[in-house]
Length: 317
Image (cartoon, rainbow, N blue to C red; front, side):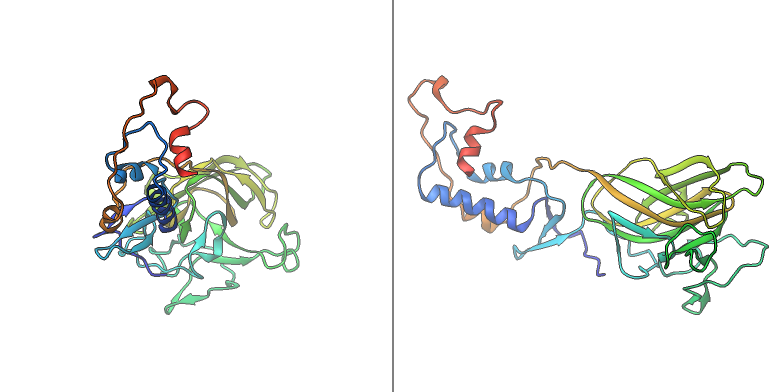
């Protein structure tokens, strides 16, 4: 997908539709000369600024005054990886085998194991380079004793220090719950330690797992089989809207396979008021007005109270 630049723009935290509706409502209100308020308005553009709410996407205003929607965070142009099958949306599933295209040290870090490795079931090589990660068919119909449904594919033979990268986009800022679908096995029936984490970066990091992460697991578990997967909730994590290179970091593991990490939106971030830069043509198209203060006593005026923003609310309704 094409990455839109975030420089040489004035950023505005509201959608074009919202902006258009706000100004149309205010202008109509003025044209009708029915402004019922105890507030003396000297410059309507200031009022309009206060009425604009932050939306989940940014709006850039170019010199011509047109709007272009851009994301709040972007993947760095220095990142050499590419999405395997397009950007992965969060909330949703990040399938382990859908790591980015780019090879060793870009899309993944594989640590060679001195053991025989079965052939991958998908992604044998890319750009003339053999895929080093082990990609397994873990469906019960082809792997006796497996817990997974037909079509399930996982990355196995995981070793501490390995990682995989995924190009993702998050349309809604908020608190997310990651759930890890993993298998880990100790043949002596003891627990195996699992220390894994998620790092949301921009692709510039040489080792993405050196950064502070979240949403991971720190536990001892034995699922009692190489192909017996269980789901474990990670720590809740706050993610801002935008595009990211997500790293799944296998920091401290043993006899480990991963099917996917799913993300559930627990709570969307609340919009907040924010100072806004408006297009010049919109500001100048709205007249500056002044309303005379009413002669009634001040205690009879409409004011903002605990019941809601009665003055401004009535203006907008």
